[in-house]
Length: 212
Image 1 (cartoon, one colour):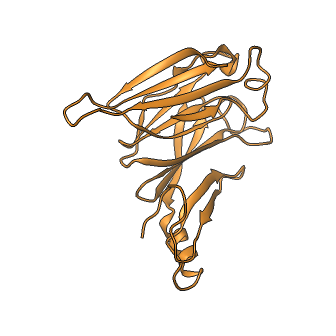
Image 2: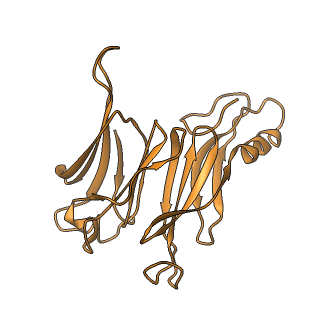
């Protein structure tokens, strides 16, 4: 089960909403046998443990989850990215969601997701505000950065995190394991920020993009 608070940390759409926090989670149902039913991912939006909305994704296994006060992003093992938004101007306080766009097909399993909004105001977005950004890192080391516009996400730039990870490994001395991606985000100025875990001669905990 993957779970995230909906909205900015401590914001009015989540922690201070009447009735408690609004949370999104995804439950993966795996087949019980080789000939059993296909996997299913169920996306839930709930408040204080009471579900207000759900979406069922057949033949899908969720691998990453990210959100803010305007968007819920669900990454999958089949390389698709499902995007959800609140149904109206009231935000996530309605404890419901809608599909914001058709799924983005990225081609490799989604390893990491991050959604961010600029801290300052001032144009650039379709609605007069500076657009937010979303970054998806895939299991093959590639990444895609999207501008979150009213008309839908628009690819801003893409590349690979592997050169940076290899440089970190080479700079860590003999015996250093290939690093793992601990965190990824996009800054207000649109630059990609990576936090890497580099361990000397042993494998780091957790998952993330990378390999040896």
